[in-house]
Image 1 (spheres, rainbow, N blue to C red):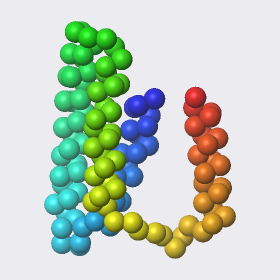
Image 2 (cartoon, rainbow, N blue to C red):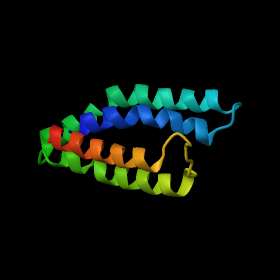
Image 3 (spheres, rainbow, N blue to C red):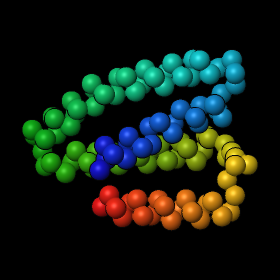
Amino acid sequence: MPGLSAALVAPLSLPVLTVLFSEAGRPRAVGVWAAANFLALPIGPIPGGWLLSNYWWGWVFLMNLPVVLAGMIAVILLIPESRSSFFVGALDATLWISLALAVLGIS
C-alpha cells in the first residue's frame, strides 16, 4: 500500500511547484524535484533492507512516520492555499465519493 500511495501522490507534487515558484525559478525547482526523485529510488531500499535484516519488519513502515509528520507540517506552513475555478461544489462531492470507493476497492 505505501508504494501505491506514493505512486498516486508523487506526480501531484510537480504541479505544486507551479504555484510556489515564479516563471524564472521553476526550472531550478523542477531540477531539484527530479534529482530528489531520482535519488530516492536507489537510496530508499537501503535503510529498509537494513531494518529488515536487523530489527522487526514493522519498522520499515514505521520509519516513515516522522517523515510524513514533517512533510505535513511543512505543507501547512509553507505552501499557500490555491483554488481552481474548475472545481465546484457538486464536483467536490463526486470526487470524495469516488475516492472513498477507490480506497474501499483497493483495501
